[in-house]
Amino acid sequence: MSGKVLIVDDDASMCDTLAAALSRRGFVVATKTSAVEALALIEEQDFDVVVTDLHMDGMDGFAFCERVAANRPDVPVVVITAFGTLETAVAAIRAGAYDFITKPFDVELVRLTLSRAVQHRSLRDEVKRLRQQVRASHGDDELVGASHAIRKVADLVERLSDTDATVLITGESGTGKELVARALHQHSRRAGGPFVAINCAAMPEPLLESELFGHVKGAFTDARAPRQGLFLKASGGTLFLDEIGDLPIGMQPKLLRALQERTVRPVGSDREEPYDARILTATNRDIETEVEERRFREDLYYRINVVRIQVSPLRVRGNDVLLLAQHFVKRFSTESGKPVVGISTPVAAKLLAYGWPGNVRELSNCIERAVAFTRFEELGVDDLPEKIRDYRGTDLSVPGVEALEVIPLEEVERRYILRVLEQLHGNKTVAAEALGLDRRTLYRKLERYGEPAEREKAPPP
Image (cartoon, rainbow, N blue to C red; front, side, top):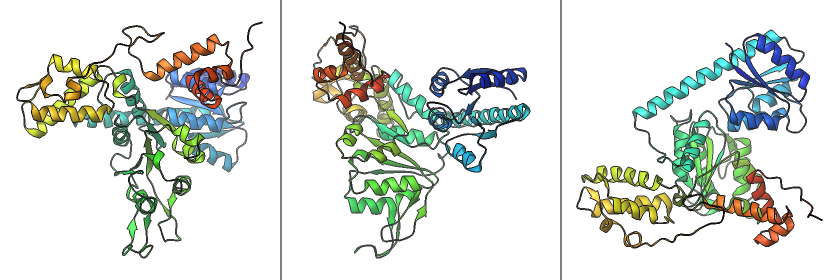
């Protein structure tokens, strides 16, 4: 079985030699001499298998494997290296490699290995297709919307369906972070297992520790019987830690150890117990600021932030407001038994004009109330809550944004920051002062925008 192959090696002659040999055996081959360039190409094009050297300048093969496994888990990676020790092989597999070949290698062995990898991906794609077919037959509509923002989230959920990577879900309160977590679970190979959720801000530290890790009989005054913690209850499925940014500082090293070791120690016990659960977390806080101000451990932040999904607020999702409104009308009319079929045009205008500070949760409550109040088949303006019915929006023009263009606030900020930098000839120290930011915050934002943050241009003479 042949397929499309990407070869990654900082030795250009090795790339050319292997590419020529594989092309003669029916593979379509592309090559890159940099892991960073290869990652960019994988985002742009679809490959059936990736072949990489382990020891490369810049990003090495281990880090490259981890990045591919996190961002494109559907693409198998085959590692080739001259250091054929068992420890190297195990490290490569742990980093996400599909298979391992040592130098010097026989080209026919490489062909067979790549053919198996292509077949492996084909089978995974078929399993994913069947899984989608089953979900469709059950009316799976957990992520409602057609905007770029929600489609991006849905695409990430789908791409992460074949991996157990830890995911950090961020966004304002009410945007649907738990819904995204449930979608990640339902789309995963753990869908048949339990989905266990806990709000880390909802209970004091001692009780939270007992809830997460369990306790033995007599561990504290009211511990009359042993209790299994949520890590163990979620085995075979997913554990969702909501409001992770509010986790008490004393609990953070204990959680870090549990995530690193994949074991938990019940309160009052001296025995570690292994668990098998995928960990998803969510927060509405600016978690980077929490780290900088030492309210959240940096090592724990990196442990939970393997893959990040940002859920956009409802106010920047355009007509998704109307799609969600119709979705909620259908749900609540069915639950209440009332023959409500939709919303009127004036209601649609009111819903689009309102800013939705409570996001999707507020919209859901609004429609539930309106369905309860209405006496007609269509929701009318009088059925809406007073603050939405009487809301008067403002028309703000933003420099650099077309009058009819609706873009996220983060994009407005990005354009403004880059414009200030341009006006100040790239001097980031002066730009940070002018923007009212400290330099570290500005550098972090520039890195997120894909702009270099380490060099400053000299001002013109």
